[in-house]
Length: 107
Image (cartoon, rainbow, N blue to C red):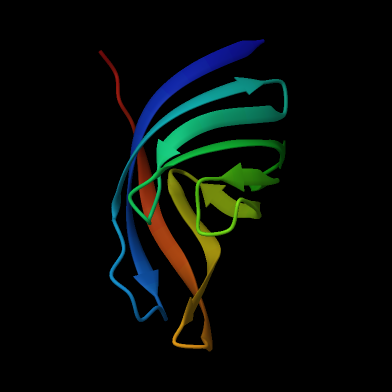
């Protein structure tokens, strides 16, 4: 079974010093438990990803951030999600998280 979804996520970045984009248009393809997609990320760049779903947990790899490829870890339930966040600013490492809600767009 395959499914193509058009979504938009709204997010808040907690524990970060920089200001980040909080609106993320998103196209997602799900085939069985495999996921792949493209979205407008927190750094206002295009990201692509591929991964696996394990219940409410999504694990994979994503491109488009300051590092070329980074791990993707996202817990999502009923549209709400949380994911770890990390930034380096002036040689300081900040850990935080991104929390948000993902809305399916229906036409």
